[in-house]
Length: 298
Image (cartoon, rainbow, N blue to C red; front, side):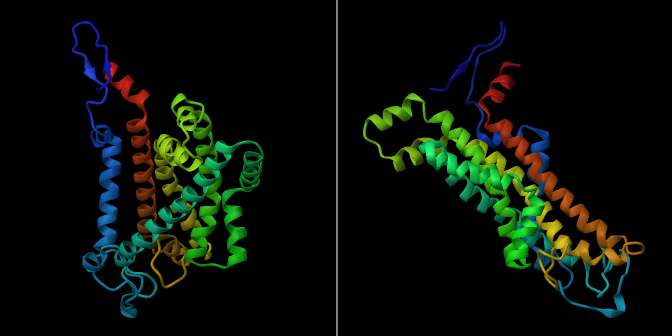
């Protein structure tokens, strides 16, 4: 039965669960804007072959460094390639470059955090000291060290950024496990003979889904910025692959005169990061029961 919140005098009591997840999320204007913006970006990436006027690497030396026009809405680069086309195709690479490191960090970090928080003692100390060592290095410096070992490229950039995110998810999941494992329902499951695997997957993991989802969503924006930075330094996505960070790097020498080469990729990076941050904030409010309770009581 749904929990009912007592109403103020003259008001009708309303059930706490009277809104679904999407209703709670989309009830926030900022979250609606973020979801709409991200939807447009994903559609642009998926429909790039249809929306793009040319192939991403099609060169036309007669149209080098042309400013935005009716023929080329975003202008052309130093090789006569359509900037609009490369921005659309670059959305595919940049979105993957943001999502894949988070998947890596979430998977490995959550596993480490669960093991450390559940078993404690030596396991906890060993894993957490390892996480402390990783956290001692600035994220970009750690990524540069990993890429310096593995070599530049998209896959290695994903690994480098993902490794830097492992401690974040490990510490978050460990804290959630420590908070939940002493609850009566977890101890009762153990007393009834449930094994470690069943307790972890049936009782602990579902309880930490909300904070992990929020953290993962916000981390995608951070990963996009980091991978774009690596590509800007020439250590991430390599030419001629379309990537927003690589486009910014290639445009440096033409910046004084060809402003469009940096403005449009930069705007796309900013909008994508903004959309994930707004969605992350909306998810935090929608998944937090205390936030829902405060909203209902108003």
